[in-house]
Image 1 (cartoon, rainbow over the protein chains, first blue to last red):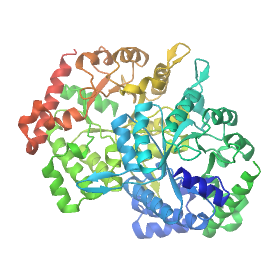
Image 2: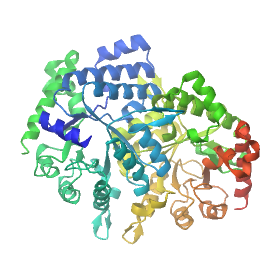
Image 3: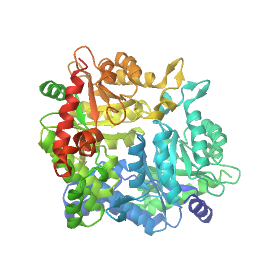
Image 4: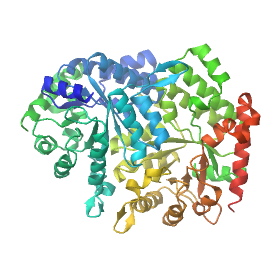
Length: 305
Length: 305
C-alpha cells in the first residue's frame, strides 16, 4: 500500500491528504435539513448529513489527491449510526480509487491491539468465513504502550501489505508536556522516532517502510531531526492550515527525492466554503469550494521544492 | 458517578470489574451456531454471538459486582455490527444497574478529544435535539498528547458527573519501553501520575476524584509509588489473573479506607468455563462458571485486607 501511495502522489503531484472530519457545524444547512426530514433530529439524521457532506466533497476532489484521512472521532461522536457513516465513507473513497488513512489513534496491550489491527486493517474469522471490519488502508497508532502493543499492527501490515502511522510528535500546543521531556539528554519523541525506524525495518516497501510516523507541521525544527532519525518512514503531517503550519514549515519533512511526507488538511478543505476566501461559492456549492481549496493547497506545497 | 461506584463497591464488598472482552474463541459453540444460523457467518453473526454471550454472563454476575469494562477493540474487530453489540452491551448493563467503564483508550488533539468525549460520555446536538452516542459512565484515556488532549474529557466529566481512567502504567510486558524512561531522575509514569492528580483536583467527588488512573497489577512496586502520588485517584487495575497479577500484588493499590482501587478480570471470568478449575460447568453452563469465578475472585481479594 505504501507503493500505491507513492504512485498516487507521483501521479497527482500532490502529497496531500484531505481530512474528512465532518463536524455538523461544517455541513451546510440544506444538507442537514434534508437528512433530518428523512431520519429526524437523531443520530441517524446526523450520520446521514455527514455522509452526504463527505460524498459530495469526495466527488469534487478525488481526482486531485492520493488519499483521505477520516478522523473516526467525528463519526464516533454520533454513536453506531456515526460508525456506519465512517464505514460508508471508507467504502466510497475506495470506489473512487482513494487510499484511506483511518485516523483512529488506537493502541493497547498485545491481544487488544491485535483485535484493533484485525478490525481496521485485517480480517476476522467467523465460523469458516473470513470477514473484514472497517478495512482502511492505513491507520494511526499510539505508541504509549510500547513494542508489544505495536507488533500486532505490524503483523497485520505485513500480511495485508497495509500500513500504520505511529504518533511521534503531535501537532497540538501541549504535545510537549510528555513528548518533549528529556531522557538521557534527548526528547521522548526522538526515542519514539528511533523505535518507529526500527519497527519499520521489518515492513519495507521499495524505498519506504509501511510503518510511518505522525509529526505535526507546527514543530518544523523537530520535524527536521525526526526526518533524519526515520529516513525510510513516510511522515503524515497534520497541522497545516487551520492549526497554523505553513508550506515553508513543511520542507524539512520531505526527503531529497521529494517524497517521504504527506500533508493533511481537514477544516481548511472541508469547511472552505465558510472561509471569506471561498465565500463566493456559497453553501450550495460547498464542494466546489473544497476543490478550489485543494488546488490552492497543491500550489502552495509546490513552493517547497 | 465516582460516588455511585464507591457506593456499589461498598454494597457488594467487591472492588471488582468484569472485563467484557468477548473473543469468539471464548463463546461456546452452541451460541455461535445459533447466531450463524440466524445471521450467517458474517460480522452480524459474530456480533450476535458475542452479544448473547455477554448477556448471559451479565445475567449471571450482575448482582455480585459494581461494574463492567467492555474492551471496545473486541467489538470494533467486527466492524459496525460489532459496535452495535458494544452499544447493546452498555445499555443492557445499565438496565441491570451496573456501572460501565468503556475501555476505549482514546486521546487526540483538543477538538478531536472533544468529539470522543461527547460520543462516549456526553451528548451531541442534532438540530434542536440532544442525542447521546455510546453513553458509558467512565472511559479510559491515553495521555500521550498532554493536557489539551485531556481537558475536553474533563469538561464533559464535570458536566455529566462521569469519569475517566487515564493510562499511567499499563500492565503489558513492554509498557516500560517508554513509560519507565527516566526524566529528571523519575520515570515518565510518575510524571503522568502527577498530572493525573493535578487534573483530578478540578473534578472532585467527596473523597475521590472523577479522574482515575490505569496502573497494571503486574507492577506492584510502581503501584505503591503511584498510590502516593495520586491519593485521590481511583486506580483501575488490569492484569489480575490471566496476565499474572495476584491478590498479594494488589494491596499497594488500595488506600487505608479500603477504597481507591478497582480490579479488572476479563478472560479469567468470561472464559472461566474453559479453565480446568471450572470445567465441571461445561459449555452449556458457561455463565455459571463465570459466576463461580467472580465469587472466587471476590474471596481472593478479601485476603488483601
